[in-house]
Image 1 (cartoon, rainbow, N blue to C red):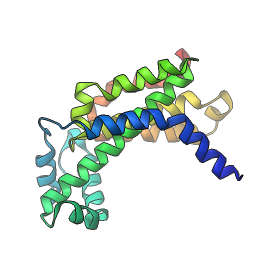
Image 2 (image 1 turned 90 degrees about the horizontal axis):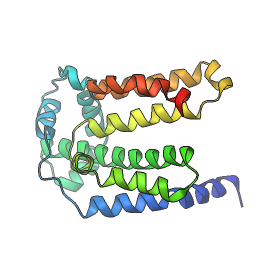
Image 3 (image 1 turned 120 degrees about the horizontal axis):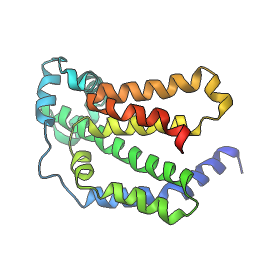
Image 4 (image 1 turned 90 degrees about the vertical axis):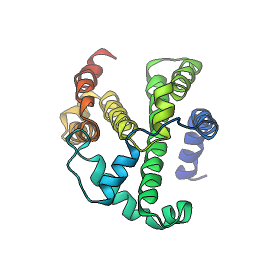
Length: 199
């Protein structure tokens, strides 16, 4: 068996439960409202990228809607705004999956018992605000996903890799993009930066 097959099997064995829980929860729920999603779609449609609080969200939505245009048209038809809304919601759903898997992974690093990591990631899935957000086109879940990526990079770095330029650059980039998607994430950055000292 090749190393690639072994790695795929290990990943499947490790992450299938939180993935399955997320899949079931999001397929059985809907958001009562989708927040500013339609407003973002309107701004993207008009190529207005002047929202400071979500500095990168609108350009990212524009790029993604162009790249995924044929798939969006197949899913929702030819209405341009609907295609953008669909794209933003797809990004959120994928980012939500990334958050759940990252929380599970981070929990596994901190505790020895598998069931604690499962409870932690499941609790995130069933958090009211999280479930609403993954069904919307807001930038909060993608920002949270990148915050988790930055935190994961920092926690997985050993003393030797921190001294190299790649680890701080990768973590800093993920955290900076997180803040660029939703500015209030700036308040979480100090906690992420000191986490390697505390965990």
